[in-house]
Image (cartoon, rainbow, N blue to C red; front, side):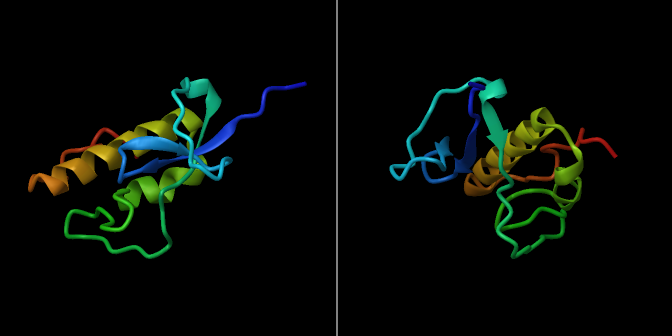
Length: 103
């Protein structure tokens, strides 16, 4: 039987990936091959002047590309969102984070 991949999302409150398939939101240490990246988009975009959504911390460019990139690239986008959320909470700029995304 093929291995079932888990759908995870980045939980900003605990700064870890949470497993959506368990009611306890069990936190797993998983390899990139085991993770199916799920968009953090909440469907309520609030972009700032830098083009970063204040709800999910995806750039508008990343959000546009989400359905057209590999799972590995999505994991990079999720790491960018984590870094942006951290930068915002520390009063820093989110502009330079993730600027190497493909056009």
